[in-house]
Length: 386
Image (tube, rainbow, N blue to C red; front, side, top):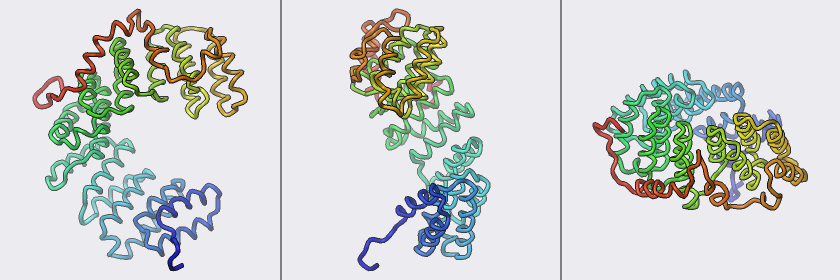
């Protein structure tokens, strides 16, 4: 084998799911044996997590037992971190917790793994407790992964004070303050706690907004029925060239349903047809949302049945034309008008929207929002509005 390419941990991680899907247990055991002999112990736990929970637990325990037999391995922080992450991925938090506290030394990866693991498994109080312990260690600097893990815990527990303290820490550290993922989770935190102005303030301070940023603040405004602000932001998003994804579409659908105006539901329904969102992998989700929106506006069964049919035929391209023709008939437009086009801005938001408020009338608000996006001031310390 000298001079030839050799399998590595990525190869193993690719092969094991194939063995699992094909039900080839012997092949899986052979790969497992290769992992042990080749010294891939650190990666083996992540690989084991690709099995179903029972098989993963059994395989992981065997590797754990092997590690305990060798002090050099059991004392290695990276090996312990990999093992702890494995237990957390298969929702064995007790085993992960025991291992964490048994470690002779812990690095930032150890703390991030256990905090993120608790948060992802819904054990919010434990995540918050360990975060407090980590924050008290001046030798370790908190990073974006830690923030993204702990702020959802604060939101779930509705502990605004701790969330504000985390925000203050972020504000004091530019590498965190400039991270879009951190800004996005701050927006979601304030929105879930019901503080929409603070959510918008956090959004406006994100220097490099991505689609998640826009989706987060649109969802916040939609949930609290801030109709004109929702429209202004949507208009601004489209104006600067950010194309909606299915999450954006779902947010708009829910917003239209909250208006109880069927013509608005028809507009987003039409956009879903033009972009073939009702034939994509997310079709059932989008279709169900449109169906629910129509039911709220009491439009009847015609639109609903067409939507459900289109979602169910997403895997049959030869049926698309007939479904499109049927839905265009329901919407009162021609098939040519429903062809996919990126001109969402000109088709949806330029029409009168939200109780007669047009986007043209909202241009001053859009200018205000754009200006706020460039603001460099955020009051965190001692402010009742942060």
